Length: 205
Image 1 (cartoon, rainbow, N blue to C red):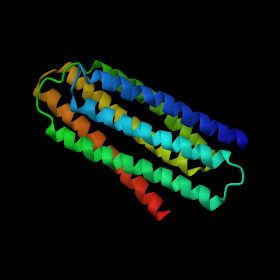
Image 2: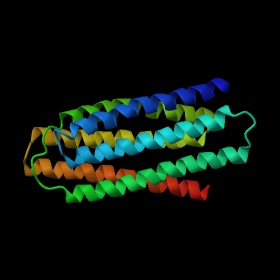
Image 3: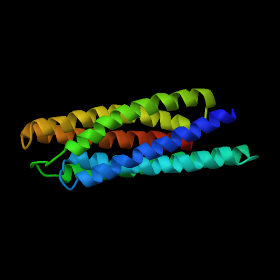
Image 4: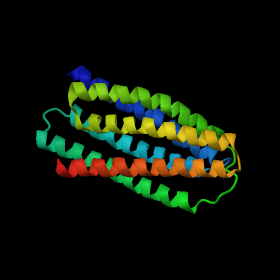
């Protein structure tokens, strides 16, 4: 069981490391491109990174302290997941506002954002399978939430990749604008859905 806990810690740590690159590259890319999907994806990945850092901290505290009371451990996990849900909801709402404030204009260079989305799709697919496997073996609430979020993140990365590919293929056109807005709205709705569902589960629990 101790090895299982170490495996969970390593997976969360690698998630934080890999997730830290996305906001950095996308933040730099926003200087050259200003697609609403790109901006929404930057906001999403930054929020997810914050939630991951909190999840790592809670998992570390609850699994490395010897003799921690079971009720205390469960409460810390609940608070960590509530924070993750809150971050998702705030990010989803802010992205929705940004989407409908954006103008129909040339979106600039979206290649960095497209590269991040495609690499994120691959990485998130791997982490989704990893977290799902760990949750089945350990039943840890933190890992369970991460498994669900990474499954949804994989689906969203497909949408983001397709939307940014359309912006790149049809620059400055109505088609580009519609795909960009649709991609941004999908990301926003995903964030809200995951946030509300996570908060609801923690409140009921």
